[in-house]
Every structure is written in structure tokens, then in C-alpha cells.
Length: 94
Image (cartoon, rainbow, N blue to C red):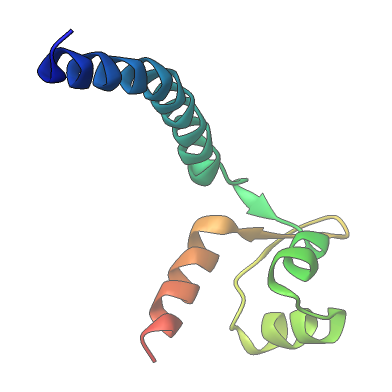
């Protein structure tokens, strides 16, 4: 076997090892990308506390001052996730 043939054989072995890894990484990447686009249509108080680290008092103050737009169904406050994203994107630049 010549030096060139040995090098080609080595490259093929490495390619056979790397190709399945690349496929797995692409599959993982696609799953992660799908997860990023999923968000609920509305957040509840508990979601705001968990995701954004807000306290009950802060949420109430933001509602009362108009910082946080909301919809109320019975005793449940709902916050449109698109509107919250807009508020966050506006405030990132400041």
C-alpha cells in the first residue's frame, strides 16, 4: 500500500467515525431549535415569577402602573407572551 493509499484509508476511517456524530448533532440541534420557538400564548403569575424572577409585589405594581398589560379571567391574571416579548425587546436597547 502506498503512502497516498494509506492516507486515503485513514481519512475514510475518520469519515466513518465522524459522519454518525454529525448526524446526531444535527438531530440534537433541530430539537433544540424547535424548543426555542415554543412558548405559551399567555403567562400566568407563577410563570412570570419563575421565568423572570419577579415577586408578587412587583407583578402587582407593574399591572397597576400599566407596565405589564394583562387580561383577567375570574381571579386569574393572564399576560400575553408576545406583548411581554415586545416590552423586553424595547427595554434591551436602553
